[in-house]
Image (cartoon, rainbow, N blue to C red; front, side, top):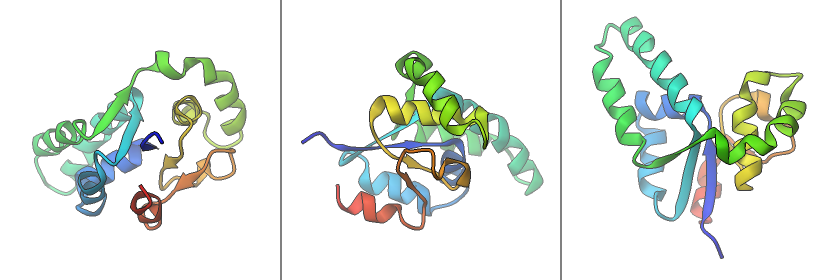
Length: 141
């Protein structure tokens, strides 16, 4: 049986940098579960983290260093891997946030659920896990 896998969206990557719970789950289950995120999610996290840290009066460089460390646990997925699912993903999420199509397409291409806190993914036909429940998925790995 192939290992379990999850596609993370940008908000989960950001939570992994900002707190210990998500990062701890990634570290604890890495190897038993494969973690993926579209490359665009890493770019989004790199774009938003400095502002979040400045807002908290913290230097942004350590946040980007933590994101780099997280990238060792979460495989970045190039758009070429999920591009064939673009139209279907856009159709599924068009009434919510069409900019999130890469996460849906990546989940479709890899045939795995999405780990998110974003309710826009609920009801798009791809299983989703939120941080408060993802341990149920991870512990079954």
